Structures are given as C-alpha cells and as structure tokens.
Image 1 (spheres, one colour):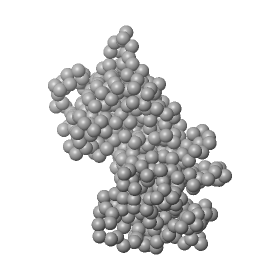
Image 2 (image 1 turned 180 degrees about the horizontal axis):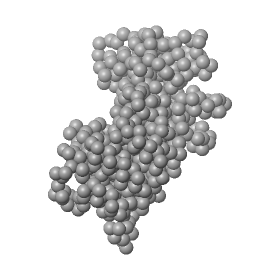
Image 3 (image 1 turned 90 degrees about the horizontal axis):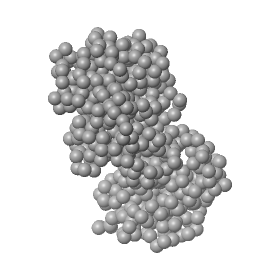
Length: 506
C-alpha cells in the first residue's frame, strides 16, 4: 500500500510540472511507456497497430510509440491529423525522428482488406488541454476509432486522456474515445475518475515518467485510499463492551418511508456501533424491527434524549412540518451529524434551517446526490455534473460542512480545502436505499470515535468496495439491492481490521 493516496492534478498544474521538468525527455519517456503497454496488450498477437496522432504533444507521444514499436518489428500504421509545420517543438522533433526512421504518415484510415483486423488502436489525438467539443476531422476520427475497435474486437488505448474527455471534470461535450485502457502520464487527472470519465477510460494506469521528486509536489486532490484512514484500522481489544463502541442515532422514517431509516440503522449496527437507536416519524411505525431486533426504536423526541455519540438525520424523513421541527432539533444537538435525503431538501428550502447548520459548532456531513446538491446550490443538476469537484467545494464553502457529492466517482470535500475522488463502486449502487446505507456506514464510524473526515473517506470507500466485492461474487450489478451492501461492508471492514492492508492485500 502506498504511503500516500494517489495524487490528482488539474491540467494547469500539470503544465507547471512539465515546465519544471522541461530539461527531461518527457515525450520520449511517455512514448516509451506507451509502447511498453502496447506490447503488453498485443500479447502473442504482435500487430498490426493503428495509431492516431493529433496536432499537439499528445500526437507526439503517439509518434514516439509508433517509432519504437516499428523498431521492434511491429507493423504500425499512423494516421496523422495535424499540420507538421505547426506542431509544438517536442512534437515536431518526434515527427522528424519518426520520418527519419522511415515512418509513413497517412491522412486517412487505410482501406482494410477482407479479413484484415487491427490488433490494437492507439488514441493520441487530443491531450488534457481540451475545453470544448472536438470538431471536424478530429471528431470524425474519434467516431471511426470507436467503431473500428468494436468491429475488430481489439483494445483501444488512450494516451494520457481519452480524446474528447475533459481531463479536469470528466465532461464530454462532444464525441469521445471509448477506451478499454488509458495510460495517464506524470499523474492522474480528476476527470478520469468522475462523471463520464470511468465510462471512457477503461483500465487506468499511471506512468510517472521517472520524474525526480514528483511525489513531494503538492497535488490538487487525491484518490481515496486505505492510507487515508489506515491508522484507524486496528483490531478491537478483548477487554471491551458495547459502550466502548458508541451509541448511534437515526432520525427519519416518515409515513411510508420507514424502510430508509431502518436501512441506515442496520448499516450502522453491522459496521460496529455499540448501540443503535432509531427515531421514526411515522405514527404507525412498528415498535420493533423484526428483521433486526437489536435496533432500539423510539419516538423521534425520545431519540434525541438518548446518550448518543453521533446522529444521522434524513433517511425517509419527509418534508412535513414535523420533519422540519425534528431537523431543527437535530441541528442544535452538539453531536457529529450526518445529513442525507430529505434533511438536505429541507435545508435547501428553508434558510432558517440552513442558518442553524452554518452556526453549528459540532461537525456535520452532507451527503447529496447531484439533484440534492443542485437544490442546495440553487442551480441545475446539469451544472453540478459539469464540474463535480467545484460543486462539492462550493457546498463546503456555503454550508461549512464536510461533503460527499455522490455519483460516478463520488467527490469528498472537507472544510480545510482538500478533496478526494472515490474509485470504488459500480452501477449496482444505482438502486433505492444505497445512499441510506452509506449514511449508516459513516454514522457507525463516527459513533466509534473516528475523526469526521476519516469516517467520511472510509465510509465512502467501503460503500463502493462492498458493491465491487458483491459483483465479483456474481451478485450484480444488475439487481443488486441496498440491503446486500450491509453484510458485504461488514465483511470488508473486518478484513481491513485484520491488517491485510499492511501488505496491500485487500
């Protein structure tokens, strides 16, 4: 396991890094790394390889790779979508070396003879500087490359970032390469892991290009990793009792929505909270959870009188007057607080409640999905999704809370200005109740005394990892249910607590 979680850099930061190491042969190293991965992907089928080289340095990387592969006897065909006279200096040098080595550039895809199939396609059309939709010939080549990779059944390797993907945000304003593999140079880019990035990148690898001192350079953000909360992953002592692991409270469960609160409570119980109390707003709510009788069900007003170490409010809460009144009381409790679902909707619609949140001394965590985040920020869901990192950070600034913006590549942002992207999880999480379970996981860790940002990072990472484990066992992603996540999360946490993370075997 690395000592630090994987760094993420925006395009502007990467330009500064490139300038700092301008004396290093960056393009030659990038091309060599690309050629090495090409050979690996080719396996026992060494060619032919189709490489697409664009008008900038990304195209230069592809030209270096093509030259090196050709020198090793691999049949390469390069389609060049640029003007040699207008290439940047490094790319122009790569172009000249490719030509001097006898390489030939094609203006269009060569005609394929009957039965001819490409063994590999390499995308070197556009780099990380893209800010708008690809146009003209580049756009046409993107469409054609995707189609060829599908019809020929071959891998499609993107260099640095799939062409058409916005490296900073994961947006796709136009046509985009749908890669099976992406080789990112120097460091990871945020857009590879959030929004549309995971659908475009396939398997992601990083080639750091052997830059000295690179790990010590400040990163814009990070991927969540076990190292972010490793100090908390300690086995329990033998001499303990239920009081050693805290009491958690769940406030929610309005009429016809009791199940949401119970899912949160069950998740908190299975993740180790010593006691879990549940305050249900539905006047016809049961007095016992027959599936989980260990839970202690209460009237909402009685819940807040219990000796709690952490509280979650919102799952199934509803937006009635009673719900708003109970949320106000929860906001006044001097406890770590997880706010989800209807608690967020009430905050978005009532400035008085939002004021109580901003004035809290005890920490709070907001867990919105994009639509809830849009209500909180008074914008559209589309605007949230266009820049998920900026949206998460704006939620932190406006409400003074820790935040997880849920979705593909959930973004965690904290009040000290840091942010992370979560790389675990799969489409199986797109199911009713999944967010309720996440709230319960975070709540349990808070009740057990974890620091707020560590509980948030661990809960988000574990939530996705549980879904990944279930899919690996053949349970989903289609049809995966929120309730199935709970025992899977318990299993994984216990594996982590038994210290396999010390050797990286998780």
